[in-house]
Length: 136
Image (tube, one colour):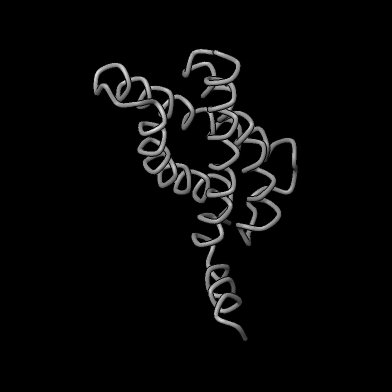
């Protein structure tokens, strides 16, 4: 087995590791949408962030149910997705509030603030989703 294949194999062995990789892909999509809407379209960073996080929410759900979590608490997709969205909305409010605080009061560039906020919300989001949705 090549060194890269070993890294990929071991990185995909735990739920948290898979969540990290899924979150990384979601973050790249999130940041791309944020930059495009803010820099190219000229939309305020908070509105851009709202759209970017929403796109990431759908992407995250698909990755979580198809790859990240082994066990699912609910068999009904509509109910499960509704709970997923609800937990994501909680994290969205946290995301928006922390982003606003860092930019407006911390005088941090919105992209630097986004990276800091994402790290915080990543851990909170994993815990909430694991407890509420993906544990029997």
